[in-house]
Amino acid sequence: MNRMPGRYSRRNAQRGAVSVMVALSLIVLLGFAALSIDIGYIAFSQRRLQAGTDAAAMAGAMDLWKSASSTAFADARAYAAGQGNNTLPNGVTVTSTTIQGLSLSASSVPLPASQAVSTYNGIQVTQQASVPLFFARLFGITSKTISATSKAGAGFGAVPYNVMIVLDTTRSMATTTDSNCKNSSGVPLTRLACAQAGALQLLSGLSLAGDNVGLMVFPPISPSASGYSFSCSSTEPSVVSTGQNGYSAVGASGSNATYQISPLGGGYLSGGQLSTSSGVVQALGGASSKCGGISAPGGLGTFYAQAITAANAALTTFSQSQSPAGKNAIVLLSDGIATADTSQLGNVYGKSGGSSYVYGSECQAAINAASTAKGSGTTVYAVAYLGGEGASAPSCSDGSDALTACGTMQSIATSQSDFFSDTCTNAGSTQSLNQIFSSIAYSLTKARLIPPNAT
Image (cartoon, rainbow, N blue to C red):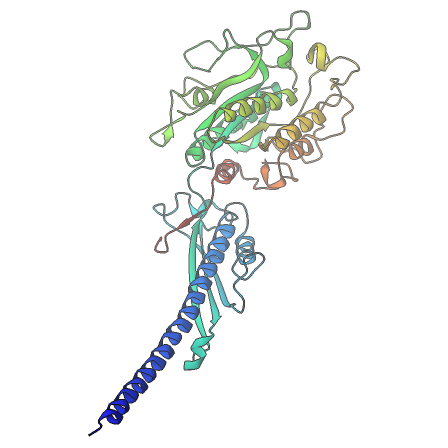
């Protein structure tokens, strides 16, 4: 009997079953492959959405200290996912963007919300987007909703800044009281005393913004030795003597003239408080009631262009020794009045004719010096003390220069928001002396993303 036909039939049946199983397996595998494409596209879109939300929070946080909340929110929205360069993958659309200002505790953000212009020290951005699906449509699913939330704080550790304070110690600062600046008893202080108190406030705020601070004054001093650093226990340096011309308003006229009172460095804080052993703190009168700080000689004239140049040179040299190099800032505290005569300007700056001649245009010379500093990357803050005088008065210099003191100080500053005054109506930032130095200190901080659970 021939059994072969039955054997062939069973083999054919088995082969048919295997073919069906392979076909079904291929369908399942292709389905998983198709779904993996959708899943990958969702994950990619999620990363892009989160990146855009992070950028929005950072952009908004950087505005919180110096701008209104509306400005911060508008900038956050401009940098959000789906805006500008923060594009999303093809077909992905943002369905909602929510921006909220935050008043966070000191444990989350060290700078207080109450002192920010916006009244917030943090910002939260939440976005939702719809991701189109491709192969999941076979199962009736056409899209997937994704979301991302990001929080950023307005001020944290330092952008590595080196800060040179340049203090006007001339007669007009020392003998004129500022009606807008009073001590705890309500007695008006001199412009110099007010500037010193403000600089000490700046040092306290810089605990969050940088370790290297120096102090220069003008007119220049003639220290007994190079590398002078002010100390309450040592003899205060005299002003530069120029022999037959008497005293000088410029450092170039003295053989060992310097504007530097305390070199760039740290040590001005101890345990979060001003260190009374610091040279810069002592020079600003912050050591004790028996040490009033650096005094202001009178009758020497005012020429501050060279002081700005000297400050920028010291900052440049210092930053070049850092790795990475720090960012530099000058804080000029002055009434903006330049009144040096030809004898006080010495043989170079007071000389008639030549490219170095500046008598009669001393204020423009200061603007030019600041422009050079700004061109090198240094940020220049200008704080004008004019004690009740308007933006159109007084005139800046003795000569033919038509610039006003307020106008000169405004031009010296890097931007309108970096010019402060208790009086000048053209000041771009707060006119409150209690806020000026906090604003400067806070502007030297940077925004940072913070954990979602920060409160």
